[in-house]
Amino acid sequence: MAVIVPIKNLKDTNKFSSFCAKQKEPVYVTKNGYGDMVLMSMETYEKSLFLANVYGKLEEAKDDMRNGRYSSVEDAMSRIREKHGL
Image (tube, rainbow, N blue to C red; front, top):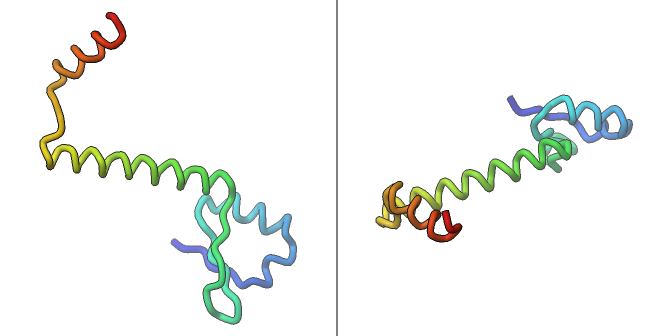
């Protein structure tokens, strides 16, 4: 579930940093009752980037499958063996 906090909670930066790290998800900050910014720990940010990359690669693979750009396992293994002299 989304975590939403008012901007006044950012006054104690050390406490807020610990709070963000415990959440393991982005924290939405409001100003005057409206969304203002989103903050997250470095760990959460890096995980988000990693997952975005993985999902992007999966979309590319699905597109390749839809367009017939794939080969059998045997063909792939043969190309790998030739490339690496195995």
